[in-house]
Length: 511
Image (tube, rainbow, N blue to C red; front, side, top):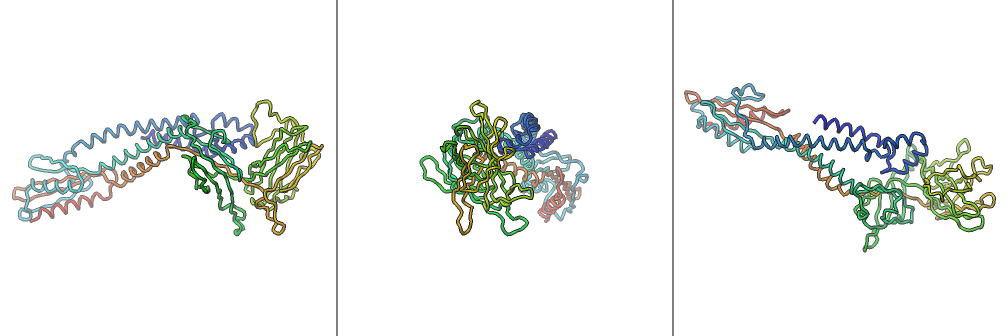
């Protein structure tokens, strides 16, 4: 038991790094950003598996040792408990007055209708009706009954520990048949539940493609409600709502919503709303006037006001390939240094700035690249930075020309602002980040958790008691009755229980 407790504490400590650093299973984008910001530290942490804490070798070792330790704790106790259930209550001690709870009664010959044997039989019947297991003993002329109850306390304790083993087993084995995946969906776009459609996918050890139940989901609208009354919390989000339409094979579309802490159950999976941001729609025309690129690009938020960054690569531009590193400000405001920042997370003054590059993007060498980062080593900067040309600055609906007649960039507006209200709220589509989680062991974990709770409550509130009643018959026909009780562990009600047994027993024996 001491070993199990130590391993349980060690498991809790080992889980701490999972909350200190982003995990690939739940926040792959956070891992990418950490590598970008900490190029020296990140590889060291990765070798220590601190970005995959819950599947790491050292965490799994503690987990398995705890599992084995609990089994080694429960099995001997279960065998001992089964033997105790079949055993008779222990013999009556010679001196009951030495026990924790003791009471005695003296009945004269004229006060009772029973002798020692009758008194013990009456005590036996009374204790059995109270849920005690009883046994009769005789020592010389003294007759006694030994009674015991509260075996359910140890049963509850064993159920609790067995249920813990069940939880560990269900989580460990069930996780092997499940999977987790992340997907970014832009307003108006759809997602089909196939492995190749995920942005990142982490299968369990025993996962097969058959576990991916077919369904389709379209993000119709994503809205955020911000605090506008309190000055202290002004601009803080207070509600997220993603309205989606889902389709299952052979069924019509169903309108649903996904909110924070209100996941959507679909196709045997749970879809959780993890993050959100803006996806500016950008169109790039090359030097020949042809559309070389047009798409809504998810930009990653960098602060609470959703100042965001993103990268656009245009490998099909002619005569040279183009790339852009952009900053999006939902509500642009100027700092004292002249730099822009966002002062509110809603679309009230949207501005997109782009640093432009030309050259070989290196997409043909077969080396995968981070879609949210741009390595400008082999590129020539043509706008922004030290290029001598200001960064490109656009509002929704505007177009700017690129230097050297390399083409143009348009910041497309989904819905131009009205002239009267200058409302930009629908001009830039938003996106959501979904975490799709399938865990076939959920019901088993729930069952074992309920059993563990029931077992724990039983072990805490059911008292384990032993009670003895001894009858000593005098030469003159009088009867001395002795009552004693003993508890395993703390039992503040033991004295009262023994007194109640004595009172009820003697009342039944009086003439």
